[in-house]
Image (cartoon, rainbow, N blue to C red):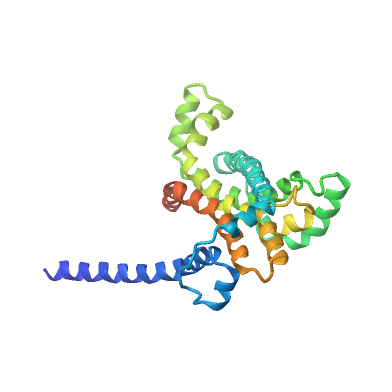
Length: 278
């Protein structure tokens, strides 16, 4: 009985702290949503956390009329292209580093780890000059390469550790059956790495979705800029209309929230698998 009471007390304490954490993380989102449905006058005169007297959808209509769908299209296009190439390049690079023995294995892996420490901001001017010279400036393609390059070292590092935990007996059995390195990769290693790839996909997807510096420097017009620039543009255009800015933020965060809701099981499985195998 004492053991059961002790366990119940610990569970009660855990639920208490979980509830406190829910309030800390959920209150700003609650404030964001209710403010986006208020008029500017109600926002300035009323209680900040009070529900709107009349739910106003005009803020969202104003956002959509301001070209929000174009920003959304640019972000979705960027994340599909960049994330697909990033995951493929990470898998192709991590496989030889994790499963093959050759003289330059450790030096190459050390360079990958060292590349993780390169700050983004020292590359903005060279990237800007390169985009101008290649006629890629102010296009969606100007953002694909930098987003892949700066997320690639971390992805290779994580995926290499993940692939090292796959039993070598599976690879040896495939070689006995006549599979070469390419067949072994696509039939054995790549399918077994799906949970790790899903974790990297969610992590890198959020990073690319929220990326601001490259989009600010390498694009200029609305036809190429992504959602973080939309938030920045609305903040300048409607600097005094806080409800409109909140509507933009709510719409911008919605895809990431949906991605996490539908992919959280893959994220947890990948993290647990990496923890066990690493």
